[in-house]
Length: 81
Image (cartoon, rainbow, N blue to C red; front, top):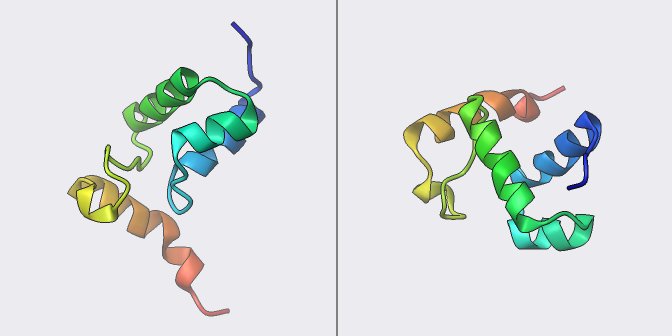
């Protein structure tokens, strides 16, 4: 089983989480990492309290906690500078 650096894992995981929310099969093919590994990483992120979308790709399918966490996480992106 290959080992991935913390930096690579964070970079790949960023593609799976808001605001990108890319599908795991697409990221797996692009990065050359198994889908199972990516599902595992996403689950670990969820257990750490990181906002992770539900099984649905649309925000309407997310839990209230995930929606709120995304709003808080991305609030600074909306600020006018």
